[in-house]
Image: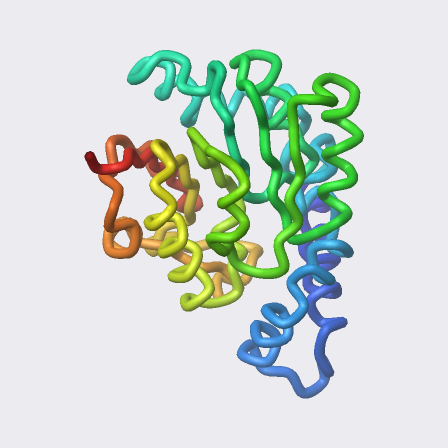
Length: 246
């Protein structure tokens, strides 16, 4: 597994390096090129890194991933609120291969699932999975950059979910825009997974990760109250539930 992770890391950096003149590039050059070509990066990066291929790399299979989701945040929502997803419209920012969407539609009886992504590859792969089980219960939305209010307007969303995505945002301004749009959205519930500002990684460049503090979330999600947070994982992942202030 360690060998596979190393190969995945090399593949990811090769994809990033292809965006610049690697012989002269600084980290700032990489991040600027990354922000300008987010779609190209996520269309071509390693499929496990993009959460399209769930049975490869660090994800270790669909069953294990679903079990982790249940343990880390889905079970809490059940205990706190009952089934928030039943008969609800759920938007997921960062569709991956559509596994969470399928799980919410089949197990939690969501009425409609909206998968959002910047990469056409992810949207197409997710559609294959969702067509098999839930053809008329999902929509897909391709965004050109950070979230915009126009991306939300066609839908009446009950729950907004994003996991393993915000850490990959290219800049603090990109992140602030995303949180600002969410704050103005007035969606009743948000579930956001971030990598917190105390995270220290081994084997992955921390300079290429947006590390988000609880204080930053509270600052920019002004219309929301945090009602729960998970324990911090060893590499800094935290799940937060937010509720729209009345």
